[in-house]
Length: 318
Figure 1 (tube, helix red, strand yellow):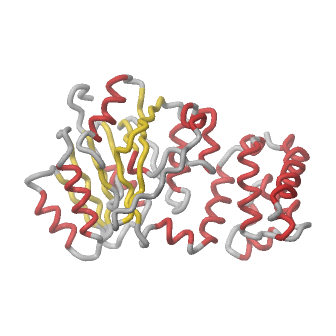
Figure 2 (cartoon, helix red, strand yellow):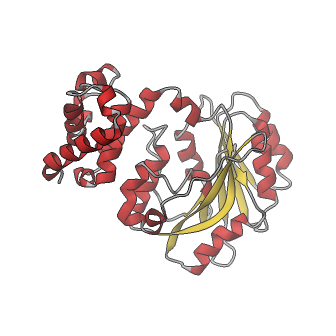
Figure 3 (cartoon, one colour):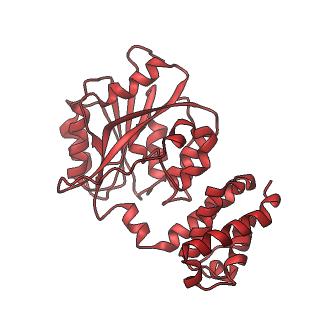
């Protein structure tokens, strides 16, 4: 690895929306740091993105790949990462872009300061196309400062943010679980942190997260069954012992309650197999099926029932 002038691979999975891609390209060109390759992994059916890459080839080192049929995310994300030859990698979604000309240098500074660091993330600011910023929600600094200990709290307080505001060392070989859409980044970062890597956080707005109606986030909110299914898959992947943590158990208690799941049969109706439902979730469903949704929406009552259920069963979570 070149310490003084490392190659940075900016991996961009693309699907149409040439205006967003152009904005991202322009933000890469403006970077003070110049040793960059750009990987464009294109799921578009037309040639607009490919033509745009040709227009920018005198300004950026672009390696372009087109997929027919489309790979779709997150398979397209993994493909882009696998093509990278850089010392450091960033997976940046096409609707996001660098906020400052110094952004890349700020990330690299963290690696320069501590060569054990393999994962750097920054604060980011979501912004709509009309220029309106989404107010930042303060994150729990205790979680940020001790991610290794609190990694399972990311399911409820995702302090890392989207992939676009993260730079990783090439020695991280973890890839995205292609079964996910909604929790794909949470699952990915949890697995990376559990490898024991060193990380660094930059409390500075370095990447702007583009907000619009065509985002996967909007699609998932409009299809709550996806969110329910993926949370259950995520729960299945985690060791039972993490459900002894109050914040984790409470998160899944609220998940089951808010989706009005009253029996295991309710989950089987939407395609979730019995064996995919782990023991803590079975306990939660069993406890909640005795009460109406109206009762469970009472905050005090719900917390009391949740605590009682956890205390009753937590000795089984090992």
